[in-house]
Image (tube, rainbow, N blue to C red; front, top):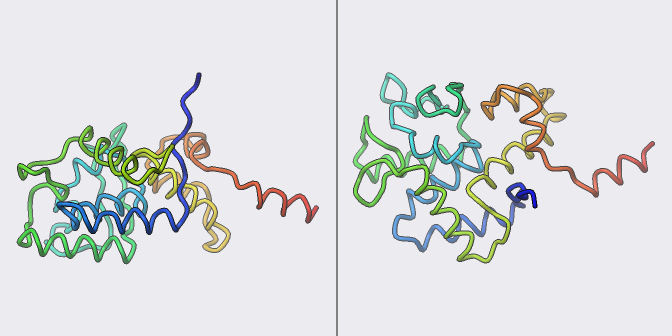
Length: 193
């Protein structure tokens, strides 16, 4: 039986997930994890490998984007992902709480080192399980990010190529597989024909 793709979440689900981070042992770090997934579309390996220079840039100030380098990107496809206001705020708060570091991991383990990609996957699995959110995985945020970005294209005059670049996919067909259709919208489209 083929594996089901990660579930795309609704806004209320994301709010619930963010609320759940507030009662965890590392609320600031965990909020950043959730927002890196849902607002920047990062993979678990990219979240685990993200360092402060990729967020701060050479000036050691927040640049307004994440510089996903070849070393952490799948397939070595580096890219810049603009920071949403809520992700930027969460990163600034974490940065301040961590003592304004200029090097090292953004998402750290209890031992103060980089979380591994497996640890990120496990954190999301445990969190979704605790919240009873079946069908969700560490890829749900990425899939939600890509689906929402694709649905917002008409408002921005963008193209699927823009979503492909944000996702770091080498082929547009890969990006298309991430986008979940909407039955209500499909019915509305057909009714307009």
